[in-house]
Structures are given as C-alpha cells and as structure tokens.
Image (cartoon, rainbow, N blue to C red):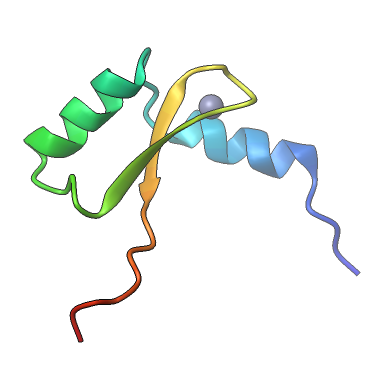
Length: 61
Ligand SMILES: [Zn+2]
C-alpha cells in the first residue's frame, strides 16, 4: 500500500511555477491563452500560487 508522502506534494510544488498573487497566476494563464483551462490555487507548502487544470464540467463534447 502506498501512502501519498508529503515529499510528493512538495516535489510537485517545486516543479511548478510559482506566482506571488492570484492575479499573477491568472495573468500568466491569460498570456498563454489557457485561462479557461487553468485555475489558480494557493499552495499550502510555499504559500504562493500555482496554476492547475480546472475541471470544467465538460460542456463541450
Ligand atoms: Zn507551492
């Protein structure tokens, strides 16, 4: 049985780009043209913001 280790989460954190504010993160998504597909969330590990794929309920099929 594998438990998710805290180190895994931290690893994911350090691999991701960090933004100081939610606005910075969303700006970056906007510039990349992926603002519809990305959500900004505040990371509990580094206290900064990352972008993650947003789960939009699949309205386009
Ligand atoms: Zn982080």
